[in-house]
Length: 318
Image (cartoon, rainbow, N blue to C red; front, top):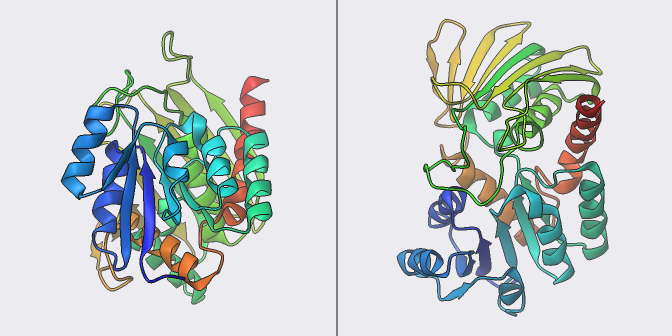
């Protein structure tokens, strides 16, 4: 394909900015259009990053012939529909996690990707964080096998705000967004599909309409188990913390950092070309476009995660 991949980014909020910063470090990729609901704020971001085209509607950017690919950092509830629109417009697409908030929408998206034949990737960043990559390489080398993963995903988010503390126009979700990271990572690291999943949740928030606390148990076909605790009520250290308990060691992953069970830091700086998981995720997306191949975290490779989430949703509803 042509030397420079030209990109449209939809959703210049907290996560959209992370992608814009990451793309600055990637050669021969140019953001040529940015789409946001607030024209003034979107124009401000465009000026800051030297982006020539500003839109308030995704369709405006999809109509630009120079756009090769789209990155969607928009509300969860529109991910599937927007990703399908990108594919139908002949654009490659990377949609932030989750790719859908229902099993039916996930199926519709994978059908659209097969019909379009374009690269369609999902922002399952944990596959790319150097900490988790280090563990994955150890597993691939036969030096470590997971017996159990213990994961905590904790936020203090009782109002609709984003990671920058700004108001959101949509409601986040523990199951379809935050649990998706761990459900996919567990199966990916085990190299084995999830065969059993259980979930319970706490009270539904009176105004947000979502559960603020959740507990999930998973079992892979190879016998490994995972315990996941999620909360929007936690007033303490925030984020997601992974404990890998294996047959030859214990490892604790905190975003791009890794420690052993004695809290001794492990050097993961040589695992990949960057220590930034978002940048590594974006590099994979653009490399897959250039090389005409399926990327890690393609809609096909993460698809089974959404089957499990659909089963858990049904379980919680029942």
